[in-house]
Image (cartoon, rainbow over all chains, first blue to last red; front, top):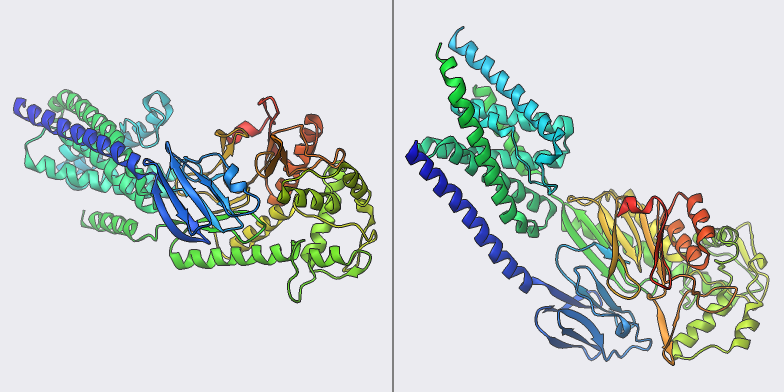
Amino acid sequence: MNKLFRHDLALILAIVLTALALGAASTLLTKEGETVEVRLRGELYAELPLSRDAELDVDGLCTVVVKDGGAYVRNSSCRNKICQRHPPISRAGETIACLPNGVTVRVAGEGGADFYV
Amino acid sequence: MSDKTRRIALLGLLTALCFGLSYLELMLPALSVGVPGIKAGLANICVVAALYLLGPWEAAAVNLARILLNWLLFGSFTGLLYSLAGGALSFGVMIVLKKSGAFSPVGVSAAGGAAHNIGQLGVAALMTGTPALMLYLPVLLTFGTAAGALNGLIFTAVQKRIKPRRKE
Amino acid sequence: MKKLLCVTVVLLLLTGCEAYPKRFSATYTDVFDTVTEFTAYCGSEEEFEALAGAVHGELKRLHEIFDIYNNYEGLDNAKTLNDAAGQTVFPPEELVGLIEAGRDWYSLSGGKLNIAFGTVLSLWHRCREEGLLPDPEELSERAKHCDISLVDVGGEGVTLADPVMSLDFGAIAKGYAAQKAAELAAGMGGESFALSVGGNVVTRGRKPSGKWEIGIQNPDGGLLTTVKVSGEAVVTSGDYQRFYEVDGVKYHHIIDPDTLYPASLWRSVTVIAENSADADALSTSLFLLPLEDGKALAEKFGAEALWVSPDGGVVRTEGFSGYE
């Protein structure tokens, strides 16, 4: 019985340690995984990680800027500039659109709401 | 009482008890933490008991009866699929570990609890097309193991007390 | 015991053969001058493509009918009607239906929601494009041609009896179109989907993991709350959705017919209702109405609402928190 009990403890410990390791790995991975999808007329144009500051020129139409974990649009060639006034987006599902140019910027990934209104 | 009759009676008893425990758990919200998928799973004591007192097929029957009855009375169909997957995986793991003879009911039940959550979550991730659900695995795994170990401990305690009576 | 074994094995195998629905999404930027997103859980990509194609097609069709800026070959649409003010036009039944709905909403909202406000709205629209402010005199001059009782609907023909008048369906067209497109998709067998036409969200069924979750934005950025729905429509009218700035002052797109300037009673109003057409018209009406009038109107439709006031205060109808 005593030997069995030691085996039990080892088994339980092994499972819990695996769980902890998985948990640590997943938190590290998800932080890297958050991305924004830039689409031009519905087609995927580029994917940018939110964790790294970057600037992307979209076909000369506008610039998508990633800074401090949020994405926004700058230098848009469109007339009304609605897209430029949109505050930075960072939650999964949030979207900035430049309709005249057909550019959409959307935070990808699970979690968060299905739509934002 | 013939051995066969006794076994069938015990099987019925365990199934009924199993269902009673499911109901009890439902009545005691204090046992759940409010996170989906995390619960004590007291009814699994009966599955472990059937495995040790009767045998693997009887335990499978109790397990299946538990899942189906739960589904008919309180569950949704998707919930049933999750439970079946969890039940099947957990059951396989428990049989293998028991056969190895290296573990007491506590270890067997703990591993069973962990396997149950892996199966459940795996099917849920597949069905909803959201692999990100697997991110809950670490939490569920920890709780599943703890719940399984608890069930194993309860069974061991009960077994010690009912054993003398069984040997008429 | 052998029998039992067989039953168990068969049951376990069956669970492995189900066609699990997967999540698919499509985004369109070519209808109703806004972003349209369609998300559905389908067994296969082909199934989703068929559903999304039908939804997109229906939205495009309705967009062309309700469009007041462009003509389309062989179609007597809203622009045709506006251009031909004074004469009788025979537009598609959807446009006649929307005009009739518009007249109902005029009386329901006590005159605050007026589809005959096109002359004033088009001036604001032009000024927004150019970044200028409208001339107050021109605004009030144009406001003289907004009498909805001069819109004649007789038989299948529509006549704008005031030759200067024009119609604008911006407050109700998206909700109406989203409703129609959702009904089409449901008729094709779509059981679990959500469609957002520029913030007019219609839902059907639920996700495998639960209800549809709609995040309600805080007018100053960030998330105010999340509502969970399955089957209901959610619409928000807010001053942050479409606006422009002149000399540091923001001018948004929802014009109060009594002041002829952007309404300032509320920062945003969110409505949850059974029907997306009602929800859209309600959210605009409530945005323009005082709280008590708005509450009474919402109650008429069994709708729930959330108001954000200029000082950031939040007011809810009694049943709204049931969705949070």
